[in-house]
Length: 629
Image 1: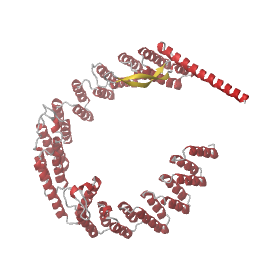
Image 2 (image 1 turned 135 degrees about the horizontal axis):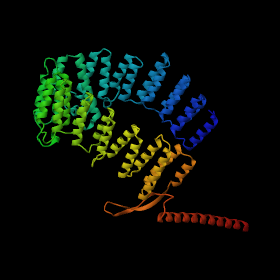
Image 3 (image 1 turned 45 degrees about the horizontal axis):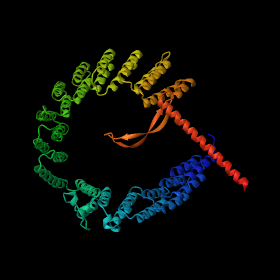
Image 4 (image 1 turned 120 degrees about the vertical axis):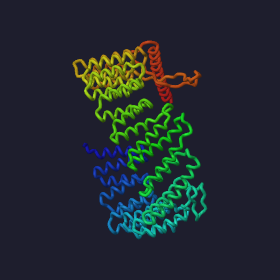
């Protein structure tokens, strides 16, 4: 608004004198000039910036962006040329090429020359592939892109040519309707990388000396992706049936060998079943998949008393049931799978809540609510986990069966009376149906429990409920009861803030009284850090709603932070050395600590006065010596 541009420049220039290597500062300076349409100033700033920080790319980006926006293409090209002398990364060259391509037909030729400079500067497979991609998609020159791919295989060293080059070259030919050329490329890559080997670690190159230690995980993955691309290509353009049979036969033999060697290798069974699911045909009529699952679930875990052995096994049954439901569309068979699984689990030792829940939800999808309820009831008796209760209650609540939800919450709380989440959800259920008295009774019963896992959540929910019901007096009584149990500073602050929000006469005075009570109690208990938190909250309230006098009264109570030392001890009581800590000194504290602090303050003042006297005497002596001379 003031338009004090010269002063702003002066400030920025002084900032640059302090830290001229700050790229962010240069950028802000240039944006300031550009925002106010001082193009020449912005150009000068960016020119200075790239001279001092030529390796910071975003300064160059901002420079060329500005020149292009003002339409000065010659200067923009000159800036790009200066940037290219510093050999930026591939994004810099691509930006230059895209700029030239935006300059019309003549610029496309210059853009092509820029990309050639790029691959000559960085002669790597990555650079050639980016060049080819640019030619294909941005320059729309398919012939040039094909020539670049061919040059990649000819000009680069054999060690630089990886599987990704062949994959992109073949995909390029496939996209442009040349499946035979793509097949030749894939065949050459298969022979070069020995992709027919089953073990990915044994896919070594045949043209150079290569060992397993030379292969990293990334290169192994690239070769695996190349092989998958070839298989996908043959599926689309080759003899599909022949390729499928070869691959499936080989993979089936591999998995059969793995599961025969270790029948309890459930991961192998998962992969085997997934293979059959992915390659299922109408002729097999689900027989192969079911046969694999039946064989897999027949291998029971070695122990029926330890749950850890069953954790992977149980997912075989779950996957089997999901397959029957979603793929085979046989809900009855899926229900039988869950039933058989539940009969196998030794519920006396342990159980799995997820199986009970999945089976019950399947009955719901079959529109058999009676069976679902029976299964949930059986699950409560045999499993009794919290998840069973919550899912059963969610089902009944979705059906609008409030009385059933109440019954379930009663059973839930009988089994887990310490669970504050259950108490709170029960109260929220009653509140949602307008039963305020029942809600209040539930909260009262909850807070009277001898052991709770999160009592603060219950108290907060109860107080919020009373506030929401506009029962301010009840809320005050709850705060007082809570303070009888715990004098935590957060409770005091919440109580005071509640009084401050009550729209009644004298609400602010009540709030101050609460703060004063809290301060006095915390003072008596010697809780200094809590007093600091309380005073901070009190001061915020006074600044928001009080006057100058009330603010000053709180300010006078604020403590002074003092650094002290104490002996640090380990767990055994051995001394580890002195450590510094911060203590708080309150103005209204009395006693030895206050006297000690006053003595220290007087000592500091005396030392300061003594230094001033000595300095003045030194000055007098020096002036006398100069007079003698």
